[in-house]
Structure formats: C-alpha cells, structure tokens
Image (cartoon, rainbow, N blue to C red; front, side):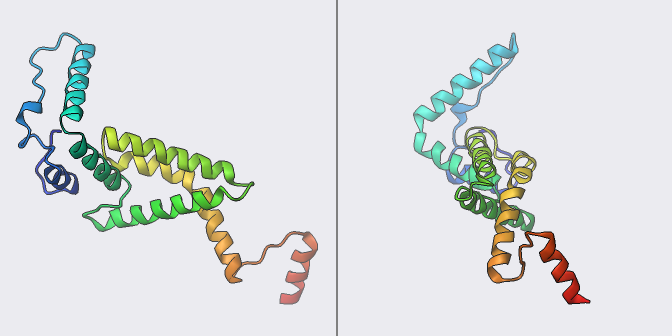
Amino acid sequence: MIVDYDGSVLAQSAMKWRVDQRQNRADVVDIKNPTSVLETNQLYMGAAAKIWKKRPLRELGFAVDKVLIAFGLRVNRLVDVSIGIFVLLALGASLWALRLPTIRPWGLMTLSVAGVLIVQAGLFQADRRFVVPTLFPVAVVPVTAAIEKALKWLGWVRKISTPAELASISTHRN
C-alpha cells in the first residue's frame, strides 16, 4: 500500500500492521510505460495477490482497521465520532428492524449496503466518502422507526390511529 506519512489514522494503521511501502519495498509496482489500462490493472492485481499470499494475517488485520476507519469507529477527529455513533445506531436499528414485518426490507437493505461497504473498505479503500452518502440515506428509515418505538415505549409519543382519537385530543386541549 502506498501511504502518505501524514499522521492520519490510516497511515498509523498501515505502519502498525507493517503493510506500508517503507517496510515492504519489494511490493511497490513500478509501471514505466504501460501499453494499456488492462495491462496496468493486471500488474496491480497480480501484485495484490502476491502480497495477500505472502502475509495474509497482516493484510487481514489492516483490512479490519480500514473497515473501522471507514465506518468512523477508529478515529482521529471529533467529526468521525459522530459518524461512528450514527453507524452503530444504524446497524443496531437495522438488526431490530428485521423483527418487524413492516420495515424488515429496510433493515435488510441497510445491512446489505453495510456489507458491501465493508467488503469495499476492507479490500480497496477506507474512505468515508463512500459510507456517508451510501449508508446514511438508507439507514434513516430503520433509525427513525427505532427512535419512534423508543419514544412510544417511554410514553413520550402516543400513536393516533383514528380521526376520532385525533378529534378527542384536540377537544381536550381547548
């Protein structure tokens, strides 16, 4: 992996797992004059396969760190903490949504999107720019349903199911 030694959480993780270019100079792919994009892609894919065969545990550890970084669960800034909190809330709400037939598809979809993002972050790039715009809009439905259920359980929100109930509430306030 080509690392910018900028003190970021990703750079620190690469150095911790010893997968950066300083510690693995033989892994750097030097492409001087590629004849095509296909040839370049094949060279990089071949190098990646050799690296995973050579040190699978270190690469797996780094992949787990990349997933944690992408989902805001391993951070070096305060804004990342808020992303991590929402991701945990979204995953928990999605698991809870699997129990409710009315929003089960939203729970499944949120967990499916999270699964794809986990694979993407682990194998390719740990970047929040993929997680935030992809996971957050889908996760809003299960999170909102979970919050509504929690508020009802606390007695702070009451479900109004008929127009007559709505009318009785409005007449009591007058």
